[in-house]
Length: 382
Length: 233
Image 1 (cartoon, each protein chain N blue to C red):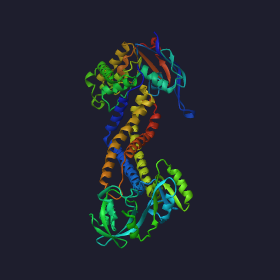
Image 2 (image 1 turned 180 degrees about the horizontal axis):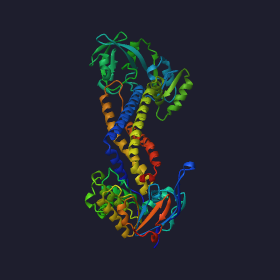
Image 3 (image 1 turned 45 degrees about the vertical axis):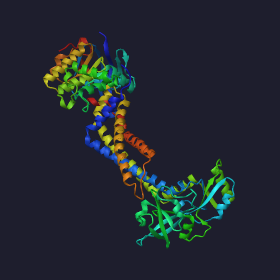
Image 4 (image 1 turned 90 degrees about the horizontal axis):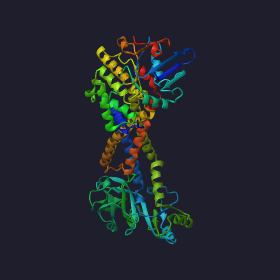
């Protein structure tokens, strides 16, 4: 007699146990699918919002951000004297320092309606802080005294359809010279890119006013060391490394406003609902099959044999439920690609959801395993 | 004749305190290879409890139990499981087949537990089912089989590990006389192959098929503890 047993037979028993009761199988799978979709969409929105709130910082190509003291979020910066830029450039190790303006403004549509926008002013000819994902037009056209670039996602909201459309920003004429694709804003005030002089004109700021100073460090220079050095030399400002400012911006919107917590709580609720449904249906299935488990025990099957059947049942449910659930999530993500608040599903999130689904289902098997642990094989004679 | 199974002064008490019930009150019995032992007695006499003790399913409150000279009392639950798997085949009144598996697969589960799997398991399960006259029902599900056929599948399953002892609890109680006779005939054949067969029964129809009748009453053995005492009726 050889020891051990095959995975094949326990898998067969597990699958037959599941498939034998179609209604219960469907209820189990619906519960898992619901859970996967809820977790997937909520965490997808969380990741999407995180990307949205950090998009300006992540795509600015700066190593360091000089910000007014107390600034936590890139969308809510205060004015900064452009002299700080020259002070930064005077520090050895800083290779570039460019002013950057982020300011709310009023956008008057051609049909007369108005919208709030966030005007982004950057120095043309420099890749720091400019628009990305350009879909039509050229950033060089922003050299026009009225040129602006908007994102296609918000074209309808802003009442424009094509290059050449004219609008008003804070009462001054502006002309659309290009469109980007997929640059979202968390505040729902669309980003509108323009040159720094245009931006200053639109918001009525002086030629010495900036919102931030974007900096690059010379090759081989440690950004952390430069951050500390600038803050030591210019105590009136704060300096962030790009990743830190990105995190600060997303933390501000997601956690200070509570938006992130509500998404996380919804995702956790999805997990809890999944655990409860799977645990209930698996437990009911185990109760139905107690005589069979008792028979196996009487025959001499070790407890681990029974556990494997139950865990495999949970695992099969997880795999099928996840496959269906993630397909729905992918469909919803694709459908909402053009929405202003779009969930995203990076590979790591899809894989993580798979792992979480498996853990959820196996965790839900604990009740059943405890029940099987208590089975007395003597019961088969009653 | 050497006893394959020997129980001595077995006591078993269910519960404790004022509600305690002594189901076995010092039972001694020997079971030998090649014999069919019928365990009789009224309800509550302790015969099923004795069967459970003999099969290593229930640890007695007191007494000794030996399988082929090896003491079983004192083994932990996992050790007892291994002993049952290797040495005992169980047959139950309600068959206790897995309803979601075919007859062949039911036998394959028992083979799987002892490490026989794949093609070897399928071949062996076919052989065992052929041995009980069900070669043509390998792919049938229990729901599509008669009571007698189900009991024969259960016997084939009990034989998977080639056990020395077959323990059966009322195996013919739910069967008609023809099916019951077939099952009893199978047990007779198993004993003739050198196995010991112990059958708990109320079924008067099979009393003539045992080599020995052991009678119990009120937790005590009143007849047939040893072969010489209980010649077939």
